[in-house]
Structure formats: structure tokens, C-alpha cells
Amino acid sequence: MLQNQQAHIGMMESRIEYPADIMFSRLPIQGELGLYVLNTHPLAQEKNITYQHLTMNRQLRLSSSNQTIINSEKNWLAPNYLLLLEMAEQGMGWAILPTWLVKQFGHGTLISLRYDQWPRKIDVDLVWSKSNPPGKAGYWLINKLLSDSKFRV
Image 1 (tube, helix red, strand yellow):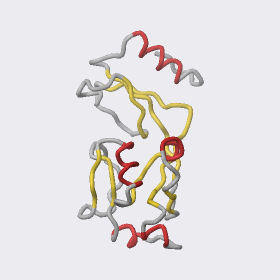
Image 2 (cartoon, one colour; image 1 turned 135 degrees about the horizontal axis):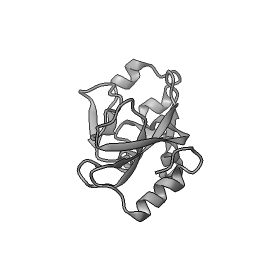
Image 3 (tube, helix red, strand yellow; image 1 turned 180 degrees about the vertical axis):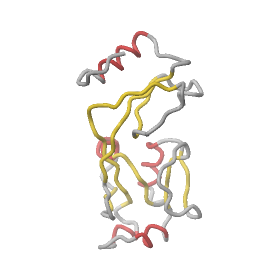
Image 4 (tube, helix red, strand yellow; image 1 turned 45 degrees about the vertical axis):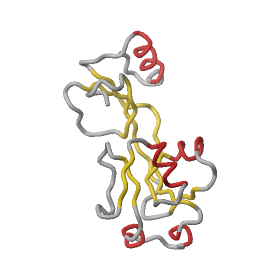
């Protein structure tokens, strides 16, 4: 979205490399991603989730990311996490979602699946475009978000 000039600032799971036109800084916080499913979905009834359980059920995932793909034949795409949340709440499948999003915007109908190393902690980067830089307010926000770190824009 930054490269298409649809956004000036973003937060995302940290990467090793970024395109040359993207500036980034690690935020002094960690996020958490979990595997979520509607509490009445068949997966919610399973005691010990296995890889096979996940592959046999539809994965709901972001269309714009390189999010973990368990089964490329059984997945539906959504352009953002809020739509993924809504799809999961409608019982359409399971999804990888930020824990904070489920807590803040969910309706209490999703459960977290315990599988392998999920939920998992992630490092979060603040990102912005060199070619389409944020304005004064954007730079204020960047500095505010990074205030606990040594980096300043």
C-alpha cells in the first residue's frame, strides 16, 4: 500500500529486507498472532490440533501478504484483517489473526487454536515511504510511536 501511494505509514511483521523506497524502524513492542476459528466450527471441538486438521479445513488469509499458507487449495482471501475477522466469525474457516484485533473488535465468538507454536510473538516494524513521505503529522506520529527507542526521524 505504501508503494501504491495508498498509505503513508504502516505497521507490519518485521522482515529481513525491505524495498529500497521503504523506510522502517523496529517498534519497541511485540505483537502476537494466533490461529482463530468460530467456537462452533468443527476445529473448535478438536482437543489436539494437527497439521492434517488445518489442511482439511478452509484457511482464511490475507490476499496482500506472504502469510503462512497451510493448504493452497482450500483457502479464501481477504484484503484486510477486519474482513478476515468477520469471515472467521461467520464460520467460513480458520484464520491467522492478531490477538489484539480479536480482543478489541471480535464479538467473543472466536477461539484460539492451540497448535505447534501458536499463538506466536512477532516483532513489529513501523514503515513509511521515501518516495511518498508522510507530512508533518505523519512524522509526528512516527516519532511518537518510536519515542521509547533510540531512533528518531
